[in-house]
Amino acid sequence: MLSRRFVMGGAASTILLAACGGSEDAKKIMTENVTFKRKAGQPEVGIQTYTIRNAMEADTVAALRMLKEVGYDYIESNDRDFTRIPMAEFKAAVDEVGLKVPATHIGFETVYKTPEKAAEMAKTLGCKYGILSWTPEAYRSTKGYSEVAARFNEIGEVMLKDNIRYAYHNHHFEFWEIDGPRNGMEIYLEETDPEKVWFELDLFWTVLGRNDPPALFKKYPGRFKLCHIKDMNTAALADFEEGNLDFDTIHKGLMVNVGKGDLPFEKWLQMSDVSGIEYLITEHDAPPDPLRASVAQSLKTVRGYNL
Image (cartoon, rainbow, N blue to C red; front, side, top):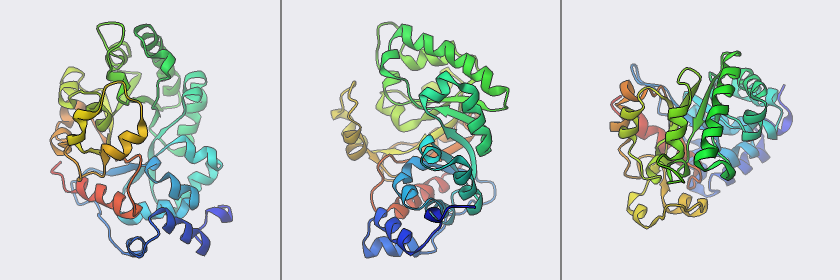
């Protein structure tokens, strides 16, 4: 049974509405029956729960129910979801709402040092993929990335024993020049076993790293099983310097809801026969208020693609 603090109540509703903007417009959007359900033949679409982390903290069930009502087919969770509350409680909340969890992000320390524990966590949630989304700065060299790639192969082998696929999610820094002819992402892709290690390509971060997704698809066909879809105001890209790790500037100056930016997602996603992409996951690290309108905007856009 879920504890009282994660069951929708009057006080929790107020907190969640505040997280969605707090205005009358936000309240209207929170209560409107607007949904973008999947039509026959369309791929399923999910969302990374990091997008709604503040609402999740206010009321887990209400936040997940909002996603279900808007029309998302599944969520991709992250470790803050089940370190904040017991994993069993989080899983019960997901089941109560009727969403699936085919993939989850898990922290570096857990994945790198105890992959068997990471696999157990992913299995408990009913996931197919357990994902790492960060390379510590100490490893961002040719030697470091190669060392991590070798460990990735070991991690992948361990996690497969529990029928969990291990995947890595990129940011922009993996594409930066380092002390050799290859960048970190190239090392990861070329030094990992495609039967043990898969990739979740974050399309926003890839472009911010000055890389072309179709070129990656063609160079490394079939390696990208999941993707993050979050849009970019590319007009601001020219002023963004490589090596900048100011995430606040990135979130506020470059990142926008899907459909409000310029990235040609439909064209890229139509290349799934080359890329291997099976899971479409929207995300926004700092979505503008009202929250429900933001997650609905992104889903509506992806639902409109000819895929």
